[in-house]
Image (cartoon, rainbow, N blue to C red):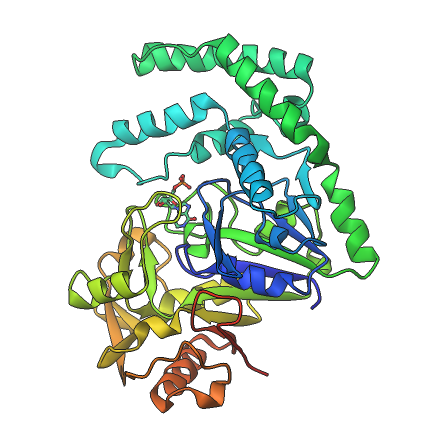
Length: 424
Ligand code: IMP
């Protein structure tokens, strides 16, 4: 399988969980490199549905080492809940490893996430409210608390005291809400520390030694490229390095250690939260896609905004990630629509362009230009061979390949592991 990065190619929710789960069958190590429990990966195995937010999807293979990487932010209460859920359903978590360097989401991060959003009013990002942005902000400000400190009670007590003094000043004096209790947080978090300590490890060496020993490593990204802190639709982004380069930053592996970069893109586009979305369909087409694709958030339950595939944005994604190929997911959802549209270019400032304008605000003034393709009515969810797809479905996939310049190597036609078409 080689060392492979799996990265979201749109605004997240591209069904990465299913593809990672599928590819993890051949992986020795799966390591997640960014984000926290803002992500939600749904995996269906043997009729059981698992919703994972922090633990890499590979955990459902008992012999795979699954790492929560340095680049993640960990809400330990959520992590312990996920560990308990997996074990109570008979899944083994023996292979779980948690990086000493991952940062810890604290109660004040969650609280501040909501308060900052409220303060922004009409300019709110529409975050998942999980404390992600404030936790990464503390990391960049060099005041964050890492897993290494969480599992050492004396250091944790000291770090909490320092941080809480500052955060309580902000909470009471800026936001005028009650201060948080030191003792409550300390007791709660020391309890989590006890549970996760056996799984904490120096994960950089595990990944590195695995690569040196010729093992197959899968680097699992969360969210999507257009939510990247640098390359996404700033400021309507998440706070981590989502792009393929983030896999190196978030795991301690150099770029030469990577062989393959697979982008995961839906056959259409969705977005949750605020921000530009040129191909959004606030109409019957958008509703059709939302209902047929069950486009409601795994993490927050929010209805996702839906629209046509945007090949201009996808081409950008191919570029900034260096994608070698695309896995096209949810192709079955487009069945039943008479006409399908793919945005091949924009008109910006009166000129046709196949490039993004650079300043995301300017995208608001661009108009998509669409290719129109005929749809198909057949149920394709049981098809396993590309040649057996309806002619119009094949033509749709081929047009996507022409527009983005890389092959579509995997097509997903349903939620289960086996609902997958692999192309040569
Ligand atoms: P945050 O990551 O909670 O700070 O949210 C920032 C933005 O990223 C919001 O628009 C969220 O809806 C979006 N977002 C965060 N995680 C995901 C995800 O896993 N899927 C889709 N959107 C996400």
